[in-house]
Amino acid sequence: MPQFYLLTVVSTVVAGLALSSDYLKTKSEFFGSFRFLQKSRTIQIIAGLVTAAIGVLKLIFISPGEDVVVVGDLLPAAAGIILGIILIGEAFRQYPKAGEVREKVGQSVEKVTKRIATYRIPVGIAGAVIGLLHFVFPGVLFL
Image (cartoon, rainbow, N blue to C red; front, top):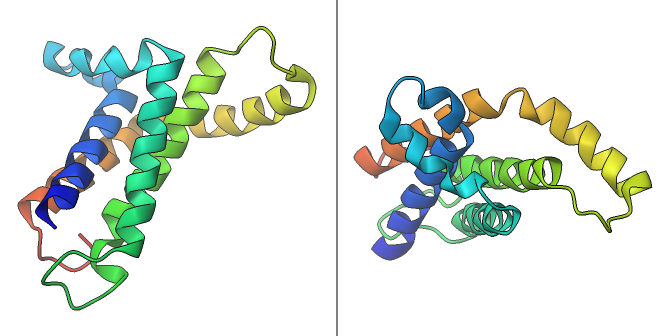
């Protein structure tokens, strides 16, 4: 299904560029436009959920013409899941709600996102590169 393939590529590249837009904006102003995903908590959570869901579905469903079931799209699926989780974690870290129970949930989210947030720029760049490589080389094993 070519639509699902294109959706995988677009969501992975956009999520990767959104996570690394702070760093890439210093290199080119074009990459700063991907910061729109980080403007609002709702947009960031929805983008993270969509990217992670597409990654999970990419593990389940195989693309037409592929003989290998899971390994064929392993990197794009893993990248989608990881980028989605990081986007959701960043949304909860950057925009905590005032009415949330911060005692237990807030502390655990803060611990996890502090550890992951240090790697969000390299993971974002790697995710965007994996998405672009998946687009350029659609039949390659693992991509």
